[in-house]
Image 1 (cartoon, rainbow, N blue to C red):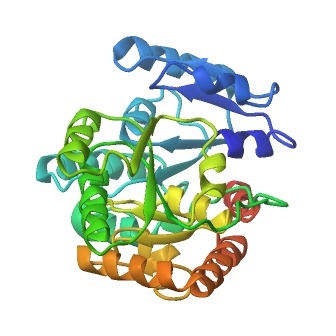
Image 2: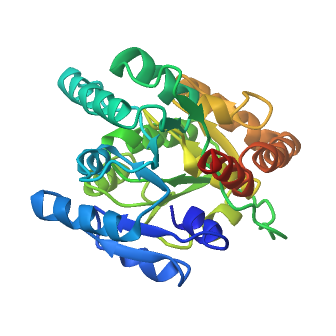
Image 3: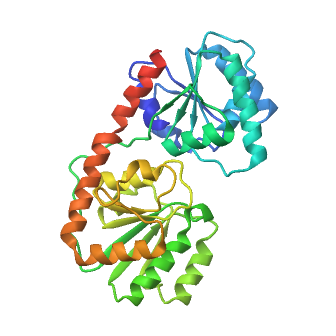
Length: 332
């Protein structure tokens, strides 16, 4: 959102309304972008209505269901084009899917001919069409994108295989799988180090597991970090062990820095990684382990796949291309 707003602000007037969070990232927005914080609930609802009426937009682009609920009851039904980006797969709750279906059907009816869904991956599209029952004939897939780093200066490969994990320490990301992979690598006699970037409610349990398995000397927990690129540049491989991912932004971020990604074949990750070409899809834990053992013993293969991964991001996930696609949609 920040990157998109900043780029679009060059030729457009932008208003960003926060419904969640404290807006702490607002300082990183272009100074011409208008930023407002609104709370959820009735008070926030009236505030959003007032902001929208004063701003009088040509395009409304919402993200996540709470935003759509708030914007569904705008007091004036202008000739505005409405876009809804669906970011995630949902958790498969039947009642939540039913509620989402009803809300989006009302939005489709109210903005007839002026509403379109944007899905961030084929997996999200498939689920929304088949399970939630929305989007048929009214969608476009626009993958997430990243700014491609220029002139990257990677650390040279060291004796140890440098493994990285970046993500929230929650069940969906399955960080305990990383520990099990490490335990098996250690049993195979592989020399490696692991850096875990991120925080969450599983952190203490992960640390206890590390100590119990004798891995505490190999695994470093560095917590939440703003400047993640420093860790990409000092890593050989990234593990994406999530059980569910709408897209997998961390994967393309790492790949843009020539990091080889090993990931579960779930969600949007299968749109990103072509197994054996620009990374590896590992459906089972033994697949992760065997791939890491192979890459450790074949530095040339690791380097080749890493270079391909960066090229694939440049070709398919450049943020500038995504912004052009959005601008084309906005223009109608």
